[in-house]
Image 1 (cartoon, one colour):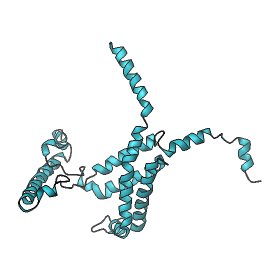
Image 2: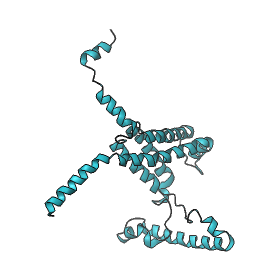
Image 3: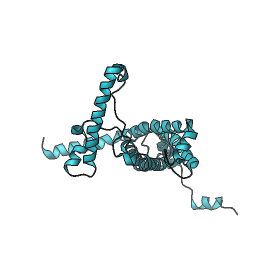
Image 4: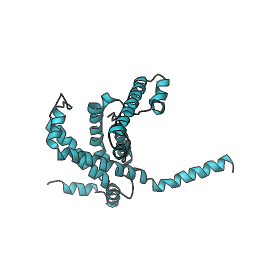
Amino acid sequence: MNATLLLARSRDFLDRSRGIDFLAPLLLRLFLAPVFFSAGLTKMMAFESTVSWFGNPEWGLGLPFPWSMAFLATSTELIGGLLLLFGLATRLIAIPLMVTMLVAICTVHWQDGWFAIAPSDPSTSMATPLAAVGFPGAEASLANSEEVGNRLTAARGLLREHGNYNWLTEKGSLVVLNNGIEFGATYFIMLLALFFSGAGRFVSLDYWIGRWLDRTPPLTREALLSLEPA
């Protein structure tokens, strides 16, 4: 098989794969919908505490108009989660959801760097190649990883000696929460992809509403004039 034929068949395969291109936005929506709905539900179930956290400058975010900000964040996440699930107004709802992610990144997570879960092994950290090229903050991240590893080793030793270590770790390994921007940035990128791609074909209300609108004949100039008040 020569290179030209191989290239032609590859292009044909890639073109045919567009028939299932709706799977990508569908999976993005199904991933993000419960994330935002559960976040909004958590805020709603403890709304007074959410307002206090938004407004308190000492142990919270110190944002102005905390009740309004908490209400906007809660309602955006609840409604946004439902709209993403059904694929309704997907491109529109992606905008306020991206704004909430930017606010969370800048006000909550920025000072904690990139990682959501602190890596405990510097040799496998993504900061290792960045440190090799002098990327700002990479060396500090590696030092932090080493310290995290030391603390996890100490914690495991204490739990093995004084606690039921097997039971405590049965559902997952011990980690140190870093609380960085990793998850927020990932959700933002996923929402940005949905903003440009839309909800996808077949398995979204946006698609079927669009199909219905395309079949509806446009109003003529005479019909528009007839709608104006005399």
